[in-house]
Length: 189
Image 1: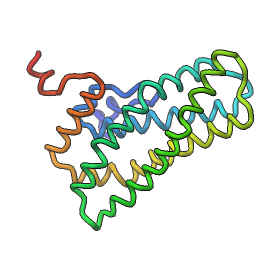
Image 2: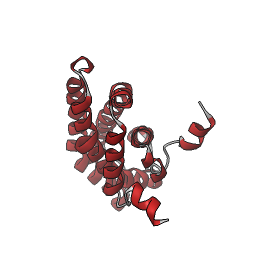
Image 3: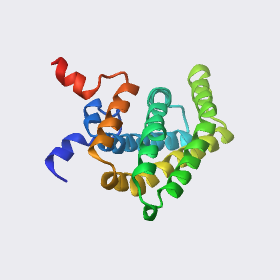
Image 4: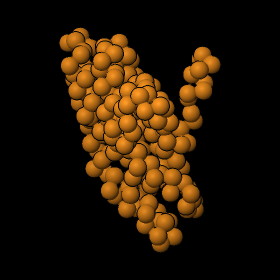
């Protein structure tokens, strides 16, 4: 690992730094680290013997503020760009289909996960056995799609996407987060 990579790489315990949006694939990779960290917290909550309000709050913030934006980055920009740029030998459509299936299942469970965790905070009542199983299932779907994206999509994206594609991806990701386009930010200084 080069020294600059160490500075950029976080531990996943905080939202991804907007400074990484200049390189959108690095930002997505860092977001994946964040997702894995949250999955670990969710799995700890699913097996914990007592409530951890701080951990629950952290997970709810991630689910309410970060996850949907990240999934939109992929669904609205990354996946279509890959579909346009990849060759038939990349077999990207099959990989995207498998990843979307896990994302869709996680999103189907998301309202239930949010409600269960918010209920724990509101009522101070521990999770039931069934709720713990839902948390574990949710974390499994999130983790599987992250693994597939890291192992398949991001390496191909680094080879196939053009500089124009990456600038467009960065611009859309910044816009989704209410940030100015990188060129606008530079000219504003």
